[in-house]
Image (cartoon, rainbow, N blue to C red; front, side, top):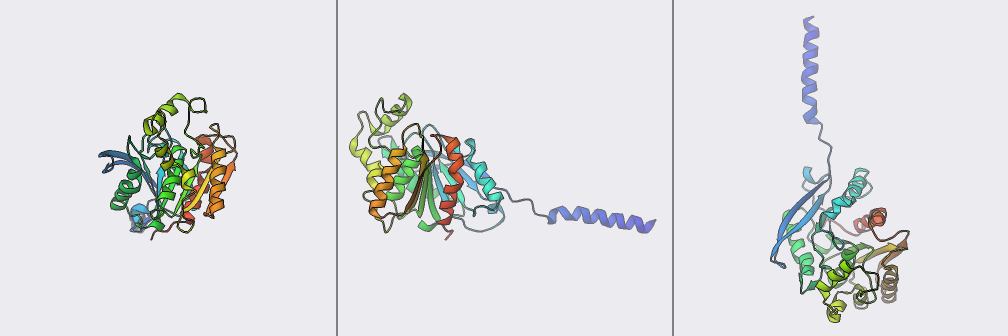
Amino acid sequence: MHHGGRSSTVALLVGLALPPLVPAAARAEVRTTTFKSAALGRDVGCAVHLPPSYASGAATYPVVYTLHGLFESHVFWERRGLSSILDDLWARHALPEFVLVAVDGGNSFFANSPLGRYEDLVTQDTIAFAESSFRVGRTRGARALLGISMGGYAALRIAMSHPDLYAAAATHSAMLLAAPPRPGSGADPYQLAAFARVFGEPPDMALWRANDPLEWATRVDPRTAPALSFDCGDHDRYGLGAGHEELHRRLLTRGVNHQFALRPGDHGYEYVRAVLPGSLEFLSKRTTSK
């Protein structure tokens, strides 16, 4: 009797001892925070997606800086279901780990304009914040850009105009237009108003050209350009497929390393969710934590 009691006590003690020895399942985490932007002179919101192993180690990770679309903010990464796609890819070990930082650029087209120095927010302040707050690589080889729609337009331009800062950029449904949007061109009044606040009405063509990825495609140096990937829905309701084909043609002519596709879909997050795994893989293969 006594012997039996002892073994159950041992079993109980062993049982109590087990949980601390079994590490909790490592989980990715999205942190929403703010940082002070010197370029804008105010606090700016951002969302930081940390990979599953981040909390338990001391490793340094590549970093993907992410730019949202018009009428969105940094919270789009979670709200549009993109963070859960990345969580799933990590859970299945389908992608290497990295840190993703989505920054709030308002309706600025992430341009330096009369509205504010939003490109500097991306290329200076956001990088400084990420590198001082998280274990991310501090070299060109560790940094990539990801952009959707308005943010895709900005990511392509920033990658080509700051080839020293980023190893790669991937975009979906980027705003690639032959000319500034005008009434009757497919843009709605809210989009036109947002555009006018940045580029003026009538548009300041010098400012437009300075920020146009199609212009940058004729200037970027093929030897130093980041690796580029851009795609668009084959029935994008804003007709952005034509601009994608033109960007592809210009980069091809100049021998700039890139990949391009028109894929089944319209303009919106149903399309983005379908193609996001491919762009994240593209960026992962072209960045390193060093």
